[in-house]
Amino acid sequence: MSYSDFKTLEQINTELGIVIKDENKLYVNIEPVKLSNLFVEIMKVAFDLAIKIDTEMARQSFIVDNVLMELKRHIDISFFVGNAFNVDKSKGLTGNPDSIITNSDNQLYITSPVVILVEAKKSDLGGGYAQCIAEMEAARIFNERKANNIPIIYGVVTDGVIWRFISLHDNIAVIDSYLYNFGDGSKILGILKYFLQNSHNSVGSVITDPTDISPSI
Image 1 (cartoon, rainbow, N blue to C red):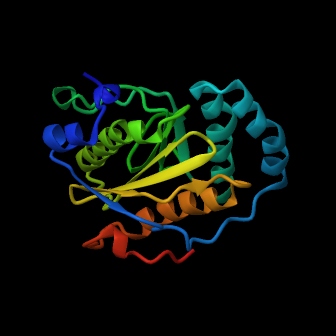
Image 2: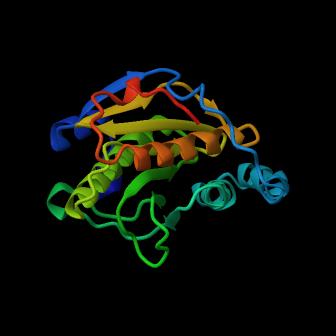
């Protein structure tokens, strides 16, 4: 069993014991970032190309990967694409997530804290929630084993055009039901940057409910 074998939210609840909740417009007030000219020029070609090719690999390569590279220009991170992330075989938490973002400058191998997991889908974003949450739970366990107890793990499920965000805290996965459109990418990057800054700033603090956090970028 692996991450991709998690197909439904009910399975996440029964097999991993994670409670699923939904909220709306949790991150709409986060400020967009100022995009680099390089990203703007690349996306003029890459975005349309990904949509025309219309495969998960194309959306990952031409949209998500470029977003991650732009994110690295704004905040010191490492990201890993398609790397093995085998955390707990007994729970089915093994496999290769599409993208892993860490709050670390070590690009040689995955180190804690793992903060964000991104899954690129061609269609049916809802079908990707269970897999993404399973990966997020693996990240929580991975961080805990490294004695780096990040309060909130974030997840993203996207087809490149629409982006959906999930948070995992205290055994509760909160899915934001709002559809965040890619636009020029500045809003999406602002949200991802907020996730990383929030995770870094909250180490050692106590957060009772991730939906109560007010974005402050």
